[in-house]
Image 1 (cartoon, helix red, strand yellow):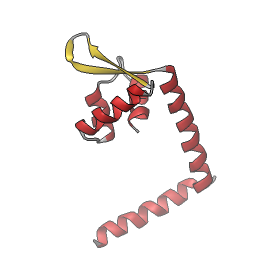
Image 2 (cartoon, one colour):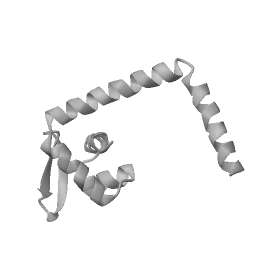
Image 3 (cartoon, one colour):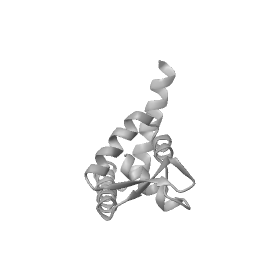
Length: 107
């Protein structure tokens, strides 16, 4: 999720995202984010570089391998959505949302 979020934020922002921006985007703990990103760095999927304006801030850059993992993940997610919900996915989602809302209201 962190890798996909970093890719999304990179594609939709003027500059590469910071670790904190990625953590905030996915709702992740700052310490957990740092540890997971270190693993992604070790696997050659992400590069962390200091922000030129503030050396305390780390900006994230997906490597070509990281971009490929994100691309493949999106394909898998879309295929799974189609398999689970089929061409009438909107009505299935709406039904599931109504069930969830009733469950929350009953609790």
